[in-house]
Amino acid sequence: MTPPVASEVTLDWTGPELLDVAEVQRADGDLLALDASGGISCVDLQSMAVRLLGTLALPRTSVENSNASLVIPRWRLCASADGAFAAVFFDGGRHGFVIRLDRFETTMQLDGGDYYEETVPFSICFITRNEKTILVHRTEWNRLDASDPQSGRLLTGRDLTPRENSERPPHYLDYFHGELRSSPSGSRLFDAGWVWHPVGIPRVFDVVAWLTANVWESEDGASVQWLSSREDWNFPACWIDDDRIALGGTGDWDDDEFETLAAPPGVRIVDVRHGTKAPDRKLWMNAEPQELFTDGRLLFAFHGVDTSVWSVASGSCVKMLEGFAATHYHLRRKELLELKPHRIRLLATTFW
Image (cartoon, rainbow, N blue to C red):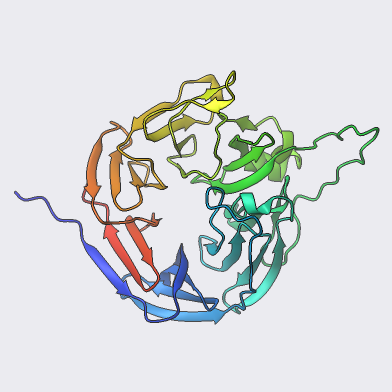
């Protein structure tokens, strides 16, 4: 019997160039799309119907000392799971906006700080706790906060004591926050930031403890796990489940040489419950991944032109998608997306 062929669908985009998309679950669609005019549309991926929700005036933004090896300066989009709120923000910059989509009104003006912001993506993500949507966002280079996206109310208010005799106050964090990724349940946050030298040191902490018990948890709480050092910090990553995360790059850190040792391209899978106390699992690949996605069973790695598909359980490559440049993954629909300025390709992954 011939196995079924994965279905592919293409949506031709006739509006202004597409900049980014985000998965949602709304009555009118499954995907939000941000275009170059500042328009945010909702796309029904079943019928391919597109509805413009509103248009945001995107300010002209430039990045000083832009370096492609650090971060690509661009407008991006993220959304709450229910599609009630969207955030539009500029990677490599300091500003962003939160929009309540049913009224298409701006509820928050975001400022991530102006200290080496060009070195990192804008630190931001939505999480859901006790059926409430919460926005986690960088408010200074070394500070994260949680806010109510509807009212803008700060949920993690705290103040450092002033310095005395040039000594750092308690809870001071010497760390440049990077891209944030929430675990599937929203219980943990992964932060791909860096410290001076510079060197990347990704870290993980417990969101529940931060929001309910210790307002300083994101700085120096008991749940903070510092993962392995590395020369870069803008690397692909995705949570496999609440305990394991896949990170692009397999090279180990050499403390004596203060560098990442040369290693074959691939991915390391880290159990964040143990941090650096347990060896990482490594999957060797033919080329370094530029993006990583997962449904918990399969790991998808985009390599610049092609996308490879890997079994998380066995570590074997089960499929090579030649010419498919996966840029996003729709977890609920189990579809890879390839986003182009005037086209979205969707490829179902349930057959592998």
